[in-house]
Image (tube, rainbow, N blue to C red):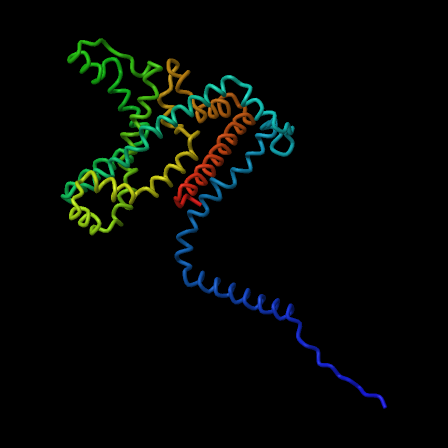
Length: 329
C-alpha cells in the first residue's frame, strides 16, 4: 500500500525580505513625492539657484578637457589633439609660472595672517558694546564698504595715493617728505592689497561671528562676574570659545581658496612697475587664456589651482577633526 506524502512549501525568508524591502522602498518614494508636492513652493524658490549652479558651475567643468589637449578653436573639443599631461609638466618647468605661484601664495599668507583675524577682533569688540543703538550704528558703518565695487575702491586708492594726492600732501606738510610713488613701488603693492581687503571686507566678515556670539547664554557672563572674572577673562574663557568652531570652519574654507587672490582687485592695481610682484595665478590665466589664446595651458593652470585648493580643504578638515573640532564635512 502506497502512502502519499504531501508537503506544504514553507515561505522562503529571502523572498519575503525582498518583497518587504520593495514595499518599504515604494512607500518611501511615495512619501518623498508627497512631501515634495506639499513643499513645492519651497522647491520652486530653490530652482533659480539650482539652475545657476548647473549652468555656471557644473556645465563649464566640461571645458577642463582642454587641459589635456592642444586645443584649437577651429577644431573644437573633439577634434583637437590629445597631449595628456604635457601642459601640467609645463607648469613646473616654466619659471614664470613658479614666480606667479610664489606671488599668489605669499599674498594669500599675508591675507590669512593679517586680514583674517580682523573680523574676529572686530566682532569681539562689537560684542562688548552695551549701548544697542551705538552697536548697530558701528555695524552699519563697517558693513558699507563691502557693497562698494572694487573698481570704485581702487579708484579711491589711486586718487589718495597719486603724486598729488591727499596722502602725499599730508606727508609733505607734516614730515617734509617729497612725493612717494606708492602705486609704482613694488614693495608697497602687497601691503596695499591687504589693507584694501581689511577695509572692504572686515565688517562684512563679522556677521557670522556675531551670530555665533548671539547664541551665548548671558548667564555665563553673570556667573563669571560673580566669580570675579574681569572683561579680559570673560572674553578669553566665554567669548572666544563660543566662536572657536566658526573660526575653524572659516579658516578651512579660506585655505581652500589660498590660490585665489581675487582677480578684479589685483588686475586693477597692476601696472608695468609692480607686475613682477603683483602678477598672480588669476591674472596670469587671464593673460595666457584670453590675451595670448593659449587656452590649454591656461586651463591646466586653473585646474591645478582647483586641485590644490581641494587637497588643502581635505587636509585642513582632517587636521581640525584630529584636534576635536567638527570641521566642514
